[in-house]
Image (spheres, rainbow, N blue to C red):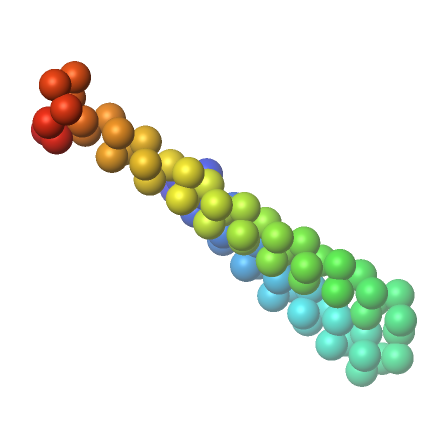
Length: 74
């Protein structure tokens, strides 16, 4: 698993876990748990976006590596 995929998967997990905590906090009328869930959910979204950004940055590397010195694509 690439680092970018790993970040996306972990971010998705944290986002889902945060959403569950947030909803449990709302249900139990526990502002602390709700806030904790909201923070974890947003951190998961951010981590997921980092994974997508890493993928985008890595894509041109493969494209540039395929170009030979004379300018032809191998």
